[in-house]
Amino acid sequence: MAITTESVLELLDEISQLMTLNGDNPFKVRAFKKAAELLRGATDLEARARAGTLTELTGVGKGIADVLTEFFSLGRSTVRDELLAALPSGLMEFTSLPGVGPKKARQLIDELEIHTLGELEYACRENRLIHLKGFGEKVQAKIMEGLAAKRATEGLRRLDEAFPIAEALLRELSAAINDGHHPAAGALRVEETGDLRRRLEILSSIDFLVELPAGEKAARSVEERARLAVQNFTARVHPPLAIRLNYVEAKRFGYEQAKLTAPHPHWKAIGNPDPQDARDEREFYTAMGLPWIPPEMRETGEEVALARTGQLEKILPWDGVRGVFHNHTTRSDGAASLEEMVIAAKTLGFSYFGISDHSQSAFYAQGLKLPILLEQEKEVRDVQERHPEIRIFWGIESDILADGSLDYDTKTLSKFDFVVASVHSRFQMDRRQMTDRILKAIRNPATRFLGHATGRLLLGRKGYDLDMEAVIREAAKHDVAIEINASPARLDIDWRWGSELRKCGTLVSINPDAHEVAGLADTRYGVAVARKALMPTALVVNSRPTEEVASWLARAR
Image (cartoon, rainbow, N blue to C red; front, side):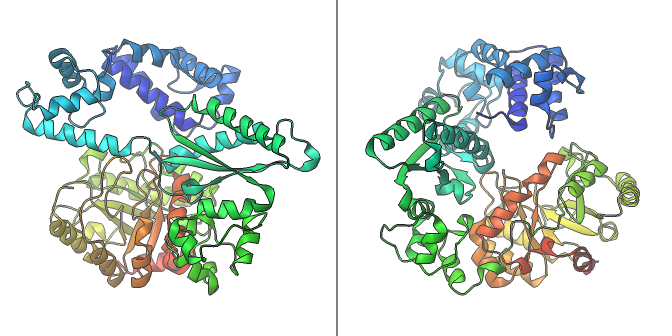
């Protein structure tokens, strides 16, 4: 499987965690954790590993370089495996649950003699944790909730986690099925289908369609080579992810790819067609009297009606974003300076770039106090002078406080080019309280964007309870853009609200919520959400040219 920078960072983080659980030297633990932070965004790690120059990078000593070199050459880490083997059975799994740190995990193992999640659940059901020192009824209930959540998400992957797996397997499958296939006949096709091809945010499997050659013997040979390729590949994927293969002869490839990609509402909307010859999808959709509909749009059936009336062209194109607003720097909890982020934004072709570090109440993220704001205001002017070809907008991600007010006073808020209003605390408010809190923030004249509207973390935390219809209507009324947070850990607001957003004419803004240079590339996930939501370009604020955006932002001031 291809090794990405992200998988390297995950390895370093995991090793630092395992060292902590094993009680290793804190300096070694910090070294691995710090290396993971410093290498974020690096693009040449594999080349350096081959050349033996990893130690030239800041934060990479010989020990860490050896770990990375082994990881790139063999796809594994002896250090990680040895640390994992040294842990008491069950400790690693237990510490993945809410309310269970290393100390409590060792308590469960030593005092209750349990080593598996199944044993832990049974112990909770027998109320054996209630009288255990340091636990009690509340901790036991929290552990039970964590166990239920873990079962619900078992075998699932976020879209960004599944992508590198799918890309690597696609290459191996293509090589396997074409091994020995006569080149004169043309390369056999293998292409993704299903949820991955539609860019769903959470995947339970990755699916492929394999083209079979003519002749029963040749077809059986291809099927066997594909099966072995998947078998060898899945042995290297941890935790496991289901991989499904479908096979079809060339003349019906287009029909099968369309059917295997389509959810029921889309397939029903195009007429539940019977099997038919179509060598590719465009041929199939033409036979249906339709233009080709991009896979990410095929969800609710609304896209079919838009296609019939020639309206698909109005939907935001993949290259339709001209700039982004919600981004962080080292002033708060980011890993790159403002200038580094601006340079990266220019490289991506953005015409403008907004910076919005955390506000003062966000103590957990080094929120900006007033003296730091003054320093940043000057920094923005200085960086803008050095990079006149890209417009920099100075903003803030202001916490929405418990009563719905924003951080800072009105005078301070008026200094910014824009304000992203976001909830970062008190997630347990009831539906009415949370809705009222967010509606009040939307009505604040300083608010231009509502950040990550539900606060969800995919496979990590449910969104808080609120009346989203009311939020969407209020945002439209006050000309506030609801953010499509493009971080693949969030993708919030959900694309399933697309119909309501369009009905109300509510503006959206696609923002990566980038905390490092590499995070800016996550914008593409937000574009996928917008296209799934069938958002017209006219309702996407950052599809607009610089001066038009500047004018829209200024109205709040």
